[in-house]
Structure formats: structure tokens, C-alpha cells
Image 1 (tube, helix red, strand yellow):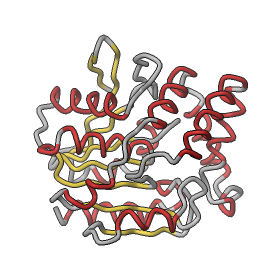
Image 2: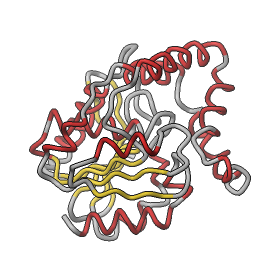
Image 3: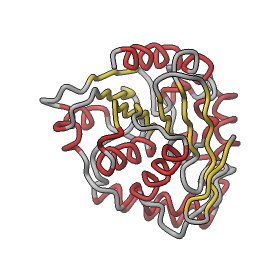
Length: 260
């Protein structure tokens, strides 16, 4: 793992392989390790940049709100350090929100965009209220909140079959400091609606959804790509496609990258 300083805050990233740059952005309560099973295959043909977003993994916290725009600026700083002028972005869940913020702020750098178990829509009033409840819950019982949050990301039918993998995800999630958890919840709550980017941007885009995603309603999320050229990939499982549908995900990503 390598590091840069952004506003006097340590940012951790890794840089593997050669070829066209692919930037992988993890979700809430995740870190670089979420991509570890995909990197060996992807890095055979591509340069894979993985970044720990603010308050996650080995990256530090920066205040009490980690906005999607601030995270996008962090990603930009890493790419500047590496002198990468163009890249394809893959964002899982919150990482997708960051990728969209990046695409709005630095459009010339984006060659392709994959939203994985993510959405371009802003939080509804109900979701915002849920974020506020989550902030109270995590301050009251940090370990309980984190463990339950991770379990709730999977298709319930998979929880027994993937018990070991889910436990590993929980262990990584518990490395996220309380400030990082709260600042990210605050940042996601205030994020902008960026559906327009799915309609008006010129580069290839792909949306990956789980039919039984407990977090993002499948039918609701189809609406954001109506009358667009966004490629839709539907998996039968939950919010964690990189674990629940790993082989199919690899195949879809490699096919998408090849076409750019």
C-alpha cells in the first residue's frame, strides 16, 4: 500500500498491473480489501488503482462530514500523484456516489463508469431519516451497528452459505473508526442527485443491480436508466455482488473494460 497526504490527512491506495487505468472505489464500511479477489485477474490486463476513501481502511478522517465531493477530490489527488489522465471508474455502493461526484467535477478524466449496487439518485426524505437513525445507533452501540449493517447487505438466502465471508467483511468493517462511520453517513445524506450524468455523458456506463438487494430497491433503480444507453447487469442476489456473484461480476467487468 502507498500513501499520499491530502489536506494533511493520510490517504492510502494501491497501484497494481499495467495498461489502461481502472479505479476501484469501495462502499460504506468497506476498504481496499473488498477488491482483493478481483485484482489478480483484472491486473493481468489493466492498471488497477484502489483507494481507501476518507475515514475507511488506512485513510484518515477529515472533519465531521465526508462529502462525496471531498472524497472525489481525494481520488483526484491520488490520480494526479500517479499522473493518470484518463481512467475507468468502478464504484460499489457509496463508491458509486463518489464516482458520480468525480464524473461531475472532473469529466475529462472519465473514460467509463460502472455503478455497482449503487444509484445516481439522492437520498429520499425517508432515507435521510434512516441515516440520522443510523448515526444515533452507531454512537450508542458501535459494534452491534456495524455487525448488523453488514449482515443486512446480503440476500438472506445467502447468509448461511456465505457465513465465513460475511464474518470477514464484518472484521474489516470494524476497522472503520466511529468518526469515519458518522462522517460518511452525513456525507451520503447530503449528496446531490446525479441522474442527469447517466443521460448526458458520452462515455460507456454500466449499472449492476442485485434483484434481492436489501438496500436498493431493484425496480426503483431501473427507472434511473430509462431512455439511456447505460448497460444493465442484473444479478439474482443482494448488495454484495463482489462476494455473492463474484465469477459473473469478473466476466461482466472484463467485458465492459474490453469494449472501451
